[in-house]
Length: 240
Image (tube, rainbow, N blue to C red):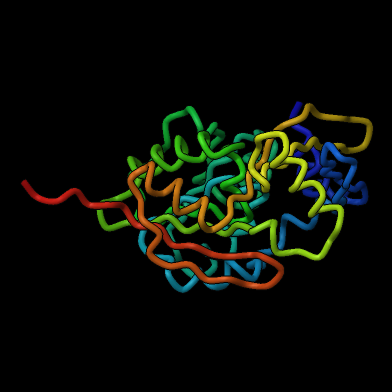
């Protein structure tokens, strides 16, 4: 059931009045109109990394094409992939031909290798947990040119004053989960999806993941409210 894709399709067809809810398993809910995923606006942490983008680009979890549109309009060569067939259809309807339906955790990556791979929009969360993130970054290393880079925009959940968020993070730790490991589901119109995990690694956890998967954190900058951007480059094995 492609709930996210249904919401994007509705917006693309002119029916964008129904809100998409991301509900956490403690009841906390974020609700957004589907049009939120359409404008080519960069989030604060993404803006810190945008000047680094170069060469052939892969946007992972491209959604409705927020980054595809922005970088295409700057003349960049960018390809998108998303697990949602609805998202892929919407991107193609918006003029993005190089968009593919893929599960980045398992499927082959079309067009690889790339000079820049984007995990913007907190999309490292796709991996679900630390082991999944190490697996994902290992796959992306194989899909990156030797001089390439991986740009990640994520969030440190410890940096907040919201008592519900802090309580949730402490509960995660008590349950032997990462503080930033969210269990969520999507709700839209009359549809309710299944629960899935989404990971917000701390900067230290990101460094740990990078070390396990052949990357090094070359640059890390913080934005507001815990958001941060990181540039990872492949570790080059010493000659001989």
